[in-house]
Image (cartoon, rainbow, N blue to C red; front, top):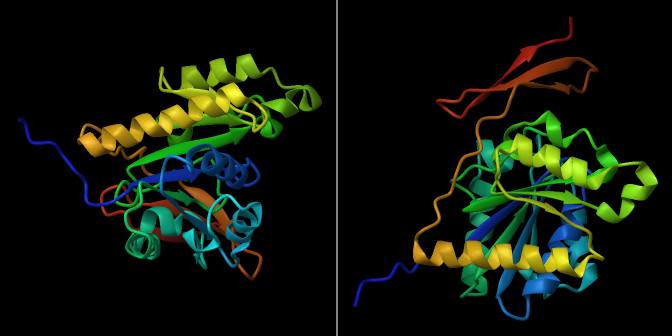
Length: 251
């Protein structure tokens, strides 16, 4: 009999996307869809709060102890890409406390279109947009949109109220992703939820068989942040060293 690959840890699934795209609600939907068949844990990331973790606990989607929060204290992408230590420790603690787990879902703090997970942290990642952010967002591209394992166009039930053509937004996303998977989703759409559930099960099966390879969507593009004195700094990432620097852009 051929030897089979049996990973010693759970699949780690990253969920990233801008603020307000519905990442926490999507994770709640995923937990409801999967919790009867899989052993799950969740880690949330916020800068100064555990609000997303408290929301998920209040939804009753998992035992409260299986939902843990990381407070990054810095740019949201820092703890999912630059220095993933806090999230790695949180994932290892969850897997030790509730062994064996099948999937640990890690939610990024809300960031911009360039934020992606390091493959040192997650085995697969999905990137979340929503129709309320505008139908043109999908074609603007960026590493998360272009190369995450799955792109979710969320809150499709709101499309009539914000004037977005969902099929066109999905077509733009498919073009930006060069054929990689895109899913239009609403938490009221049972068929789309079923598709998302099957996607996770397929990724999990590939992870267990050793046929899934984590892919780095690419380094973040330079972007700006304000400082406490009201100035602005350009935040850049070094592709080779994975460090980041700040250059004064206040003038």
